[in-house]
Structure formats: structure tokens, C-alpha cells
Length: 50
Image (cartoon, rainbow, N blue to C red; front, side, top):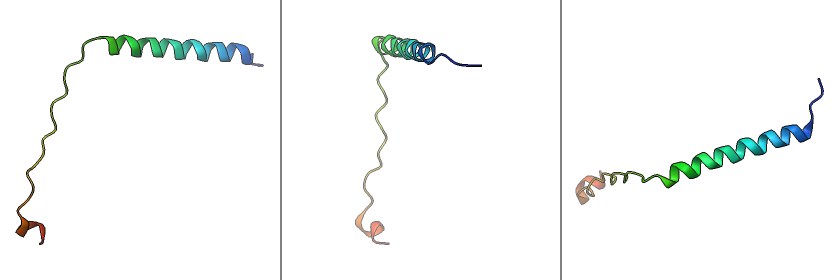
């Protein structure tokens, strides 16, 4: 069955536009702040040489 390349292109463009619109909508909502990463204090010098 032959496929119309123009129709495929239009479908891809519509899908991309829809995806971008959803991403824009999500980014417009206030996002909760991400928790700060937990970092360990540096190991004492004696333990780093072992």
C-alpha cells in the first residue's frame, strides 16, 4: 500500500507541535523545588590514603 510522504510529514509535524505544547504547559505550572543533594563531608586525610 503506497504511503503519501506529505501526509506522513503533516502527521509528524502535528505530533511534534502537540508534544511541544504539552511541554510548554507543564513548564508554565509552578514546579516544586528540588531537594538539595546530600553530600558527605570529605574523609579525614588518613582514610583517603588507605
